[in-house]
Image 1 (cartoon, rainbow over the protein chains, first blue to last red):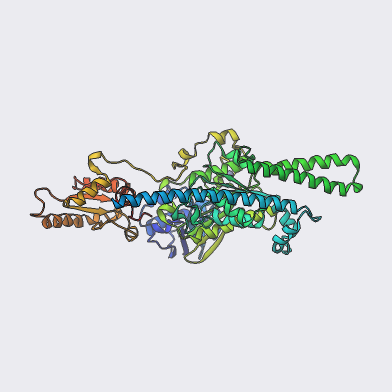
Image 2: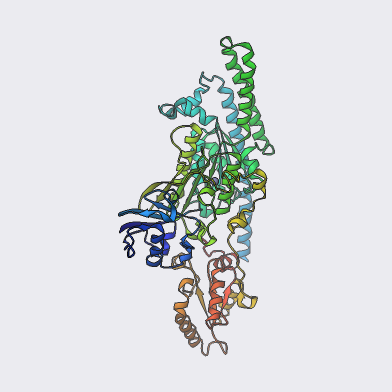
Length: 99
Length: 510
Ligand SMILES: [Zn+2]
């Protein structure tokens, strides 16, 4: 499945300082859909190069990270159970505090 | 001898400059107040819409906007906005809010203006370096628009004062302000009386007292609180505190943040929309909360977000357009991208604004935000103390070692881009993150130093010292160096900041 993943607010530092990743995520055997839960573990294995605890806590993102699926808060689409479709754009952004 | 005389001269000049600057600011204040008083006297000829000829001229470009017009401007003039933080975000926000004619503009900050603020905190001028930011910002706002009321809150926001600052008029603030406040109140009462009298023939007599009463109430309302809060602060605990305070008092919050080359903006607690805690119920780990003073920030980035904060505050105050509630603006300066995303609504489970757990004023006063976020409210830099005294030397002691030409190697563990800004002579840059992999470089540097000193200095082997910016990473580095066999490694207490402070005043700090 072709997806565009974006990292911001400093999270890009965990994946080679690259903000936009066009990726192809293979569906697991027998599965016909990809959920955000699957995508998170794929990202953790394939994209996160350092300090995974800065990205995830347990099986979800750490506090202070907003997840947006097609420019919409994943809280509105079912969080981890959100199912993804071809060409979806998923943004992971760390909240900023500076000023 | 001549050095002593020079430093005496310098301090005399500095003292004289300081006293002249103080005299100048007293005179400037007096001029501003007199000008405002004169303008009030001259502005008696207000037209039927309540705008004086001078106001009509000053705000003419607003009045010409069909979607804003007289009613938008009147709403602005009757509104009161509090900006917390007169830094990178607060600077442009305050300037625009003052210029556009917000009736009362409050500023909260406890910091002093520093030279390293100037690249982004554009409200301050060099003249104000070393003086309170609130004073500097208020004076800039008054010089842009002397017809509005600017209130200075020169204190750090705490749970003990936030409710009072947000919702009550500061009775103990300076006298001039109190006089100005009374003068305005009397003027408004007089004005409304005049309007009432002129429409008297049109209304029934016993309705008049009701109308008068409503007018009085609405005016007291107007003078005892801020309608809108702008969060222009720079740390997580303060952001939670401001949001909770807004929830408790039912005030909309225009929240902006910027770091590096990115910015974020949204409006919380507006018209049934989410609060900060709805979005971030659990605080992030402290390691995820970077500060501009450590990570850097391109000056114009908070400037852009601060301008957008002023815009959102103006829209709410003037009741025009659609405020950015339930949505968030994400700004990426490097790729020139602005993304506006839909965020969750008010959460029923929210600890602050949820259905079952409405935060009370008492709970707010007692809440420990520093403990909640594991971050101090004031952004003073961390001072670690990881090493025993025998593994540390002061910057002055290190200076002695240089002067005595004792054989040694100094390793600077800052990131490479920091090292490029400034470094100690002959220091070897090995960033902390690469330390383990580059141990052989340290061994060979020590060996070379010993060989170079054979016959020059007798006996002792070359010592290893570690330095960083403020003396925290150097301790972490010494801890791991000692574990990896460099048992006599020592750190320089307080790092380069201490060097600049105690040894070489001309050494640049950043
Ligand atoms: Zn809430």
